[in-house]
Length: 257
Ligand SMILES: [Zn+2]
Image (cartoon, helix red, strand yellow):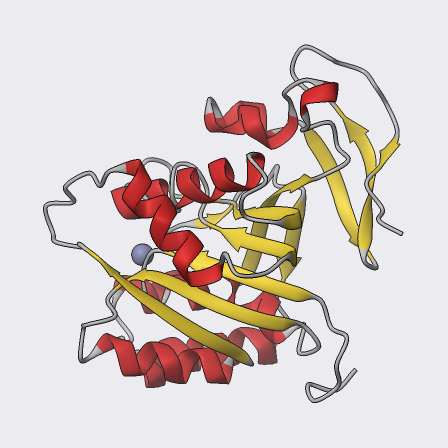
């Protein structure tokens, strides 16, 4: 499907900073030109260097960029949860999505508080049905507690090895649009494989099914192994699942329509 055609899935990517969208999900966005994507960054709207770079990167990724300006000083002072949530809603709360993508609960490297706060706010809004989306993906990367550069988590249910030309375009966006030097941490990180944790309505996240799935993933990384799924068309199929407290339920399906 061409980028100009209507009918692609509506996708919102919610990140803390300009460059997070490219680093952690840029290849996936490039692989889906049919998606109608909004990329929202919670910080740096008034950063005269990074704001225009972000808008240019969003265009290269086939997306519309929206920015807010949460405090983002080097001391990483914790922000009130309500302020983060309100900012998320102000950026992307105006419509329903097929898919929302955001940070993992522990961020992607060790560590940046804004990544973790963004993840918490988006997951909480989605759980409560305020941020409306059929599906939620969280970036699934880890850096061994800082021992190595971030890489996709081996157990993540969605892992997408990027074709060389797609990885190359992602790398060029980081180098040429964002201006990262070749020896910068960002450029050296540029994951060749992208990973995501997954949550879907109809998976038992609602009140009637009890709490499970991605909800529990905030507690321990190991708990993320609640589900192994893969994307199939609009919805997706659960090949096995193990929701905490409800083990061994076997096959299920999250396919919509
Ligand atoms: Zn960041």
